[in-house]
Length: 148
Image 1 (tube, rainbow, N blue to C red):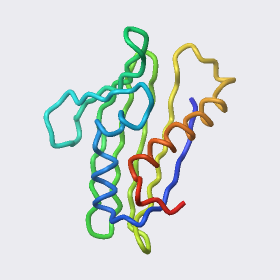
Image 2: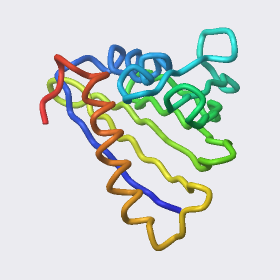
Image 3: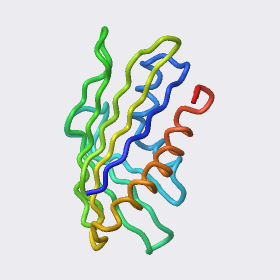
Image 4: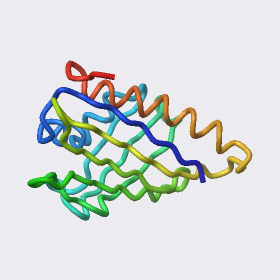
């Protein structure tokens, strides 16, 4: 399994950051050639399912996910959302944590995944690619509020 982490600090309130990062269709707009379709009625909660479809025309793959943990920020407690990935090609999980910090919020996105047919020898490459792709997606979702 390939594991990576992306950390960002932004001068936005934690509730606004949480709202942006749990807007599932917005994720698809941040990754090239990707659309995200929510499969369950809102609001988001444990059991919410959605699929990110990456590709062009009939060439592509689905990355289906389900919210396994849903704890919006409350009081001093950070918000945590855990997504389980259960696709034929991509399996694993992602965890998004949003905490208040001086002057704004801190986001930690941690993901662990396996890509079917890709040998473990390529885990380092997958980790680096994940940091780049998800770093750019986070930057887009947090645009106009990023400090680092």
